[in-house]
Length: 130
Image 1: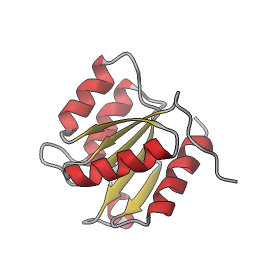
Image 2 (image 1 turned 90 degrees about the vertical axis):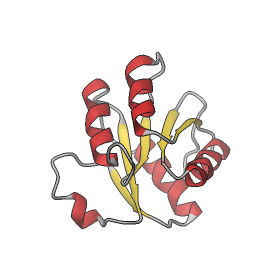
Image 3 (image 1 turned 180 degrees about the vertical axis):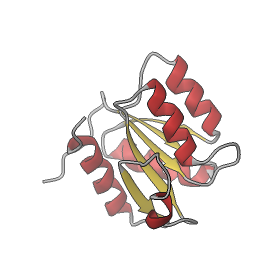
């Protein structure tokens, strides 16, 4: 019973590896979501703060240059507390991130199977209680 995304659901994707961000953006666009992709987490944070359209979901890598994905999640939640979050990482485990106060709604290890990624986004978007 997979729900599809709708064009009024906005997903921000933040990954400093441009090709991985573009892959996630393509997958989610094909699944019916409106997407916006960022390479720089500071630009994504600025967009959350300044743009009129607030994302329903933030999908972010953990290791990035200027800040970690957890730091980005923490800053974005200060601005938009209801925003759902997914943290991606090929370098740290889900156990590692539980040491921090800030927690994503979901964690996905890289590399991830395409179908599992889209399913996790759908579940996070549609089964999360805000």
